[in-house]
Image (cartoon, helix red, strand yellow):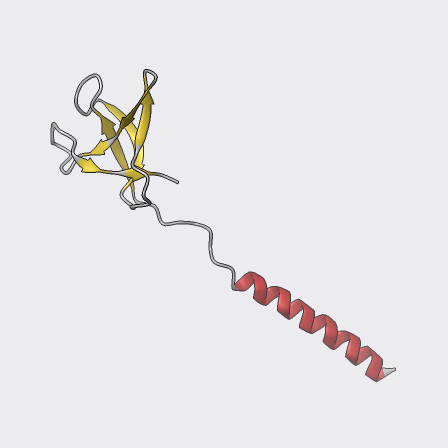
Length: 91
């Protein structure tokens, strides 16, 4: 009887440990974002803002404005009147 109980308990403990190990080894899904405000040049330079990122994921930051897709650019310096910094889409 003791041996049967020990075998069952040990099996349950090993199974629980395996499940715990599987969850503990999962990669975190949260990404480190580097958010930055992007700006489009329509109707005037750097007037309409968009949420962009500095992390290069291969997709440039765009915004749909008046039915047209416009690329958003960032400012190298917050006081700049022009926007020329390439930014990327937040995913």
